[in-house]
Length: 365
Image (tube, rainbow, N blue to C red; front, side, top):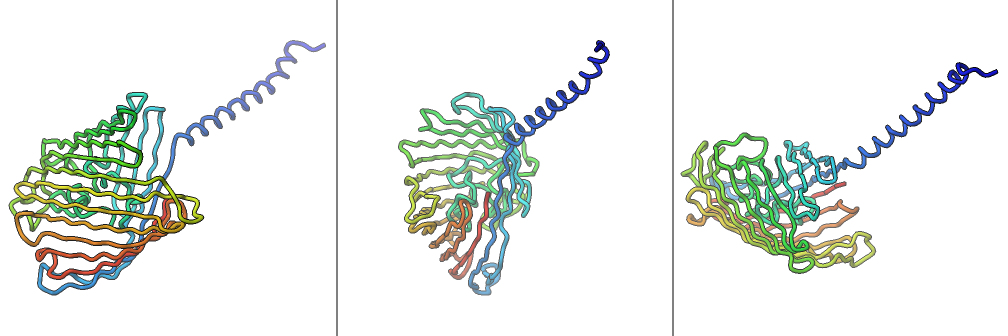
């Protein structure tokens, strides 16, 4: 006769086995959920650059360059914590930590999202774009490089177009209108603010038809100089100074198409923008027109004309670049680029116009 004790002893292993199966299933579900919420992306850009020599007259000398370079090696992770809340961390192994911020979408229709942390700010059409998306090997136009704080402005230092702060953004009118409003440190990345003022950035994009966007942005701020600039000698290191910017531009992209058998069809594009700024009492201004046209299979032609004047009140601080090149997409986001640039320089930048030849390989995932 089977007693209750024997039934209990026989049931214990079965219960333990069932619990183990349930626990394993729970762990598997948890891991599956975790991996579905975290995505990793990255890219590297490396290449070669050649510039012919200038003359040997002191500060105006431009040395010959013939060198390989590794420009960027970025990896970032994005975690979708909830359907409304996410976090991103980005590091460039060739330089510094670039971004770390959190987004929280307040409305269901993407009309209002809040971002806090360190990220690419909204000024200009080009600055928020990834180098993997832009057509030029030198990436951004001179005006954007300088005015958006990408690096060539010694007063602001090297900030890769990024800053620390708080931003609200969203899409309205069935995504025909996009806005961004930000209150930023103004001091750039990985750096404590040098003054008590915060910088305000506003951007508005109108998208009247598919493929077309019209954009304007403004920047009102107070800079804290981390260096000195030859074209702006009244501002010394450690000084606070007025730092304002504006930009207006337009971009049109066709529907994606391909002239051959390449599986990733691409659009033709045309983008133009005019930008200006004021640092202390010195005005600067410039603009660009860039186009990219698929011609066959995975091959594009790239052309660009751009100009920038660092000090509109003093002769000789202007430079105009004319670029023509090709790029070949050998796999999705991966490409090989070759570009020639003729650089026409003001006397204070170089006493001789020069040629610039560049090649680059981009690998991205």
